[in-house]
Length: 113
Length: 111
Image (tube, rainbow over all chains, first blue to last red):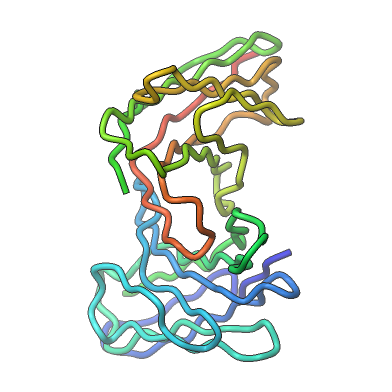
């Protein structure tokens, strides 16, 4: 399955944070979502074969990396209080005949003080 | 992706069928209807998807109207563990496309 680390994180405003995701084996696409309390997940961006392949309405201080070993990172610079949320990653296999589902991890709960 | 409309909350008695409606009146011909659910403090979980025919799997059934402007997710025998937020999403059938989540329906299964 998809795993994420850490499960919880507390940072202060202005700091930088790195969240990690381990995709399902063999998947070539990872997406990141931000979920504020009481709302549905909002798409941040997607990486396909290590390249950013689509971005939602999030500023450039949100960035990512995708590695060949099925792992990926979400980096957020200059943290703001509104960045407090559950961050979800989802992996999927894109390609002819591939599955259509995105498989989500359990999320990382980020609190910015 | 087309927009969907779902009731914010519903209750269901344990053991009874839960019928969750979704309106998607602006759905395009190449867009599928997907359902995900999110149990408290967990990531969303895929349930089922369909294009125009009714679909059934081990978790649920999906009924799509003939004009495809609405659909219903059916949990045939709801249990307490089915208490969750259920999201109806319409999207082109490509795993590379982002998912656009709305507010979903909070289903409370009661004993």
